[in-house]
Length: 385
Image 1 (cartoon, rainbow, N blue to C red):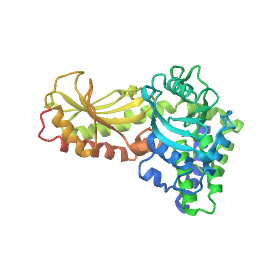
Image 2: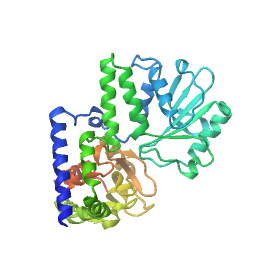
Image 3: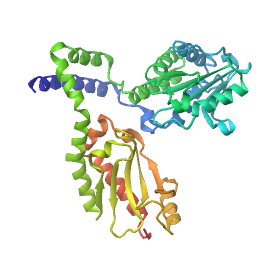
Image 4: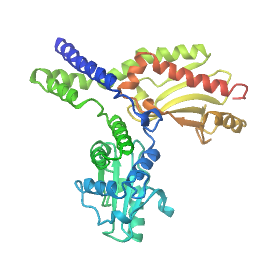
């Protein structure tokens, strides 16, 4: 135990030093995070597509695309491609085969198909469908399928088994390409600094935003022989630490919110870490509806919230009135077996990492939940629920 406390003390000192550096240099500022780009795949796809487009507003013509192909070729051989004649399309509709996130075609009828996955799961036979489309339209050898994820993982078997594709990552491929783009844009200051901001954004997405020198200092400490046992003991307890913070700190905070608004709190305990786990608020006067905060991925991933039905397929004649009311606060209208309407959480609380759990401990998450619940209750006031 003494060794663990000593180890934590050393790491805490380095983290404090890193935080001081970030504060002194403005390193925390990131316009992409401020405007909520974080987890939205379509927005990130638009940013990437603009840089890859030879006709893009950056003015660097085909050079960014050429650098991208050169970077990807380190991970797998791409088809021949004429960057100077490239045409870039986002959300390209390919009939019954779906929509391709980024489709790049040249004048020689060659194509690069890029599937961008940040947090979303693969769709049914997704890469297989794209491969079918490409094989029919460009023929074998004339196209390349790229599968882009945060960490460069492979597609699911259902999506990509039997398909030739190159897995690439934001963590390495995109960051290294963007850093080359910065060098290319050295004499284009607005473009250069915007790309630097996006690099910082991607590093935050992939948990690489600590200054490298401080990161190496931490790794040197953690990898010492006398510290390895303590490191592994700490790592084995991370999930239990998260559960304890929710159980001992967040659940009582939510109970206070429920009491304030005369609601009943129901939450799934340690099962919050599972897909569909979360927190429910009931009003005894509501016959058909409930307020729900839930996770769409395991380990506190992809949080969303909204108005759900108390029971699947329960009748609710005023559902259209509820949905009309919630349009005021930009909820996604859905009305299916469980949901009347919901929206994804925006920003740093979409997937709960250390920032989210620190926000629980310092009370910020409580205020975030309270504000959302107040907004929903105020918007739904007077409706028959």
